[in-house]
Length: 220
Image 1 (cartoon, rainbow, N blue to C red):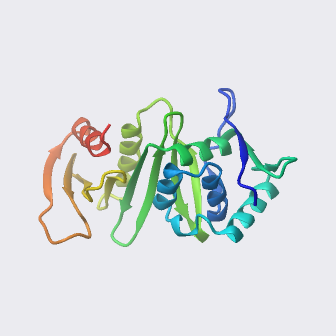
Image 2 (tube, rainbow, N blue to C red; image 1 turned 135 degrees about the vertical axis):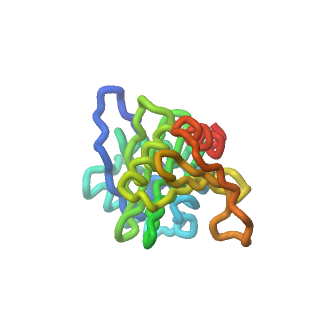
């Protein structure tokens, strides 16, 4: 597969789908459209770093994107993407911030990965068969507010559950832990799978205080 490409960003009047699904091989193609440290970091966040240069997967991913009309082959052999797919490629290869949100229940963990660049903000969720769903973050709220919205909805549906927030660019492994306690919130800081060390908890917080803690862990 030729790795050269053209990307045409979406215009203001283009409508983004609520969510678009991508296979992992398709994401590898988008990550290779502009290889560099940002693309490598995004691949690591998506757990695809080991496959980033796999030519057979890149060929399969390019064929899949073209077959479903998400990309086209130009006369010179390069791959061209535009609109929302170009926006996803752009944020993956120019991201400055990647925030992982784990949504916890007693027997399961779901993930949301927020990837942000100077121009775009996307949310990605892993789904079956190594696929990912991508959606644009709401433009009328801040990324921290979007994170809080996701966590609050999860805990409304799973009152006994919890959530963690971690900035992947931060070399420290600390995470923000959030749970519902009555009409308020309890947050803590710690490493879930690290050495046995007491989690520092702050109980009885308001929505505004939790949002402040999310901004802090995100380093906004």
